[in-house]
View 1 (cartoon, rainbow, N blue to C red):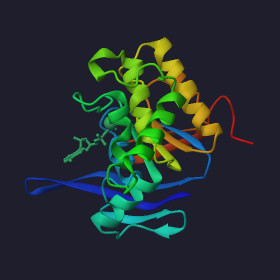
View 2: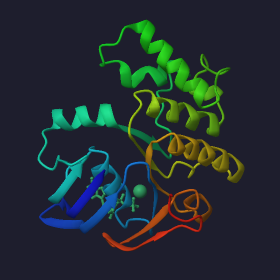
View 3: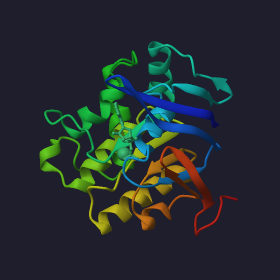
Length: 230
Ligand code: ADP
Ligand code: MG
C-alpha cells in the first residue's frame, strides 16, 4: 500500500544542503502496523511527513495504492491527505477555542458535507474514542489522554485508510499511553494501516513491525515480539 523507493530529503541551510533522508526503501502493507524508532534527529518526523503527503521527497518514488504520487502538486497532495490519511501528534495540535466536537469536525469543513452530517460523524468519532460525555468540553478542560482521544477522533472522522502518529504517547504517562495504544490497536484491527514513531519500546510492542532509523537510513526492520500479522 505504501511503497517508498530510494527516498531522499535534503534541506537547504544557507548555502549548504543537508541530506536528512539518504535513500529510504520501505514497503508497508494494507492493514499493517509499524513502529518507527531511532535517535532524535535521525529523520523520523521527516519520513512521516513524506508518508503523510505533508512534504515531498527530494528524490525517489512514493507509490500509494500503486499510484506514483512523487510529482503530485500541492493541491493533489492535499486531496490525498484529506481522503486517505489521519494524523496524530505528540502535542495533540487541537484548536484551543474549539470544543471537542468542533475540533473533530475540522477535517470535514471543506468536504461539502451538510452541517448535520458533519456533526453526526464527529459525534460518532468521539463516541468511538470513548468521549461521549466530553463533546462540548474545550481542550483546556480535558486531561492529556482525553486531548489525544479528541485528536484521534479528528484523525479518523474521514475514515482514512492510513493513520500516522508521531510520538503519540510522548506527552502521556505510562497508564494513559497504554490506553491510547489499545485504541490504536482497535483501529488497526478494524482495518486501518498504522505507522507511528515512538521512543518507548513498550509502545512499539503494540505494532506488528519495528523499523529502526539512524542517520537518515533504515538500519533494521523486524517483526516485534508479538510477531507479524496473520
Ligand atoms: P526526528 O524526528 O528523528 O527527531 P527530524 O526528521 O525531525 O528527526 O529531523 C531530522 C533532521 O532534519 C534534523 O537534523 C533536523 O534539524 C532537520 N530538519 C528537519 N526539518 C527541517 C526543516 N524544515 N529545515 C531544515 N532542517 C530540518
Ligand atoms: Mg520527530
